[in-house]
Length: 286
Image (tube, rainbow, N blue to C red; front, side):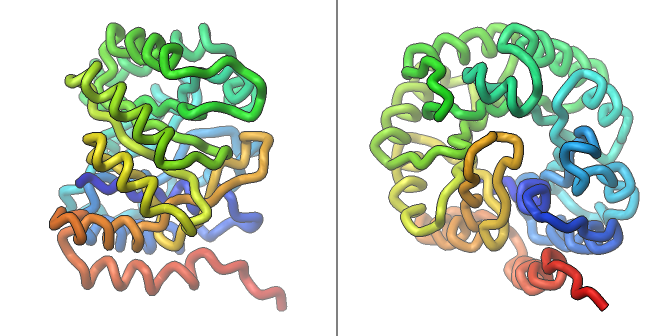
């Protein structure tokens, strides 16, 4: 199983800004655990998500020495992709595509047509600079905006992305609760249809009923899962009440129950878990 740990997801929903040094120290520890990928930050407007304004400074301070983990940054436009493509430490560039026009308008202030054009730009930038593109599909299981959704529409959009050259597509529910039946239906349809694509699940959940959902994806052939230690975070730009993220602690326990290896250093992971409270805690006013 591949575990994609996203401190970016965990931090972006906080109301206070974590100091750069604290972020870098915590993320440095995450790179010692052996996660497949760590998403260290995003290139977005500081006015919209102030927490991510120091992403480039964080990258400069993170200790990447000895890590085999992939190092990912999220971008929301071509300009951001060009900027992060010049950072040699970063290996993967992610983009929150969606088949929901409502989500794209709220989250990226764009349209589906323009989002496809941005994906094309990102693919070209990655090909030129040796990075790997990761194209998320947000609201992949439906949406709260009244936009059309069904599995056939999802299939059609993924087929377009495949023809463009996309090879990694994690699916996210973002802000709507979903159950194991729908997860099983989606993955059992997509994975046989597109065997060359690596599908993943970025599950937003209350962490009360996570296990059946992860089991459904796993049984359907999914082996790539996003998570956040402590279950922190969500999407602050969805315009809807946020669900938290799948807790990494739960995901690792699931992986071990399947005799899968989610991380390589349990002591390093335990230390990272111990750093969460001091890293994410709101500073006490004097």
